[in-house]
Image 1 (spheres, rainbow, N blue to C red):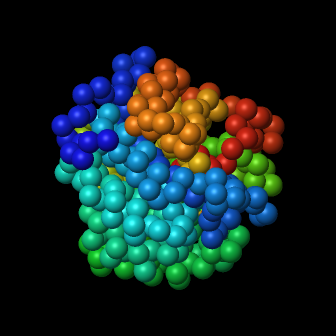
Image 2: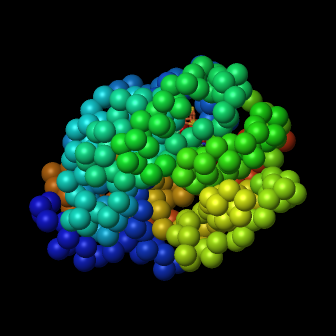
Length: 343
Ligand code: SAM
Ligand code: SF4
């Protein structure tokens, strides 16, 4: 594979609906130190470590995508920071910044952020997403089934001190956090962080009833508008992906809404996901995938084989997702957890 990736983005990844893929979400592990009730079951069977792409393989996959015009990579999981070798991976990926890659970023639960914030900055990371569903220590521990809020808040402060920009992601949970959302939004905006609300998605068995957790975000927005003035931010200007943003007049900060169930956001989709075992999923809401790991491990010419895999994957990108929630709040066609595909 050539060294200078800027010279070779000759065959951009364009799907059959004319959408150009420029954004890769790369999962590095299915493991996590938390067990959020909407994401994982209490008892999880994690993959054997040998099934995971090695740090070197993750970099090879990333390079193949950058070579085909991917400009932004988000590292995700599971919890990416629990995997060994993250400093090496960020160093490798950071070296592609300015050479085809424009942005390297991370989604984390922030439990290990305090000790990793400087490492991220040193490798060119500028912005990260932190998932946080409550500022109440008891609710936080209940929702994550084991987390300690203090640890996460210390991680957030360390990252802000290190100069990282943070966006908070909060899953709206009918019985757990809806009443404290205004306080969370004020807290985030007070620290200069945007906050995005997410609707619970029907991904994988968690042992919980998702219908019971689910609250449609238009309903949450109506409630917020009783006290606040929300100004829609032009989608083109906000560069929002699946989020729709508003500016909250009273706090001066931005608030996003990700509404996969009430509002389909697929028309402008520019992203693909690669799991920690090297499967490309062209859509979070569908099970169709291509296996890059065997291409990497079994082929005599991994570069050419990877390229052919990307071409095949493009043909599989569907026009839109087809989430459907059954009576228990599961989508029977989507047995995999968000932590496997990479959130
Ligand atoms: N562990 C990291 C974290 O929590 O930020 C990264 C992986 S996590 C799977 C990525 C995002 O997916 C988190 O913001 C989490 O809240 C969200 N998520 C997980 N399962 C979900 C579900 N069923 N519905 C909606 N969001 C979900
Ligand atoms: Fe872990 Fe993130 Fe899933 Fe919570 S949402 S269990 S932190 S992977």
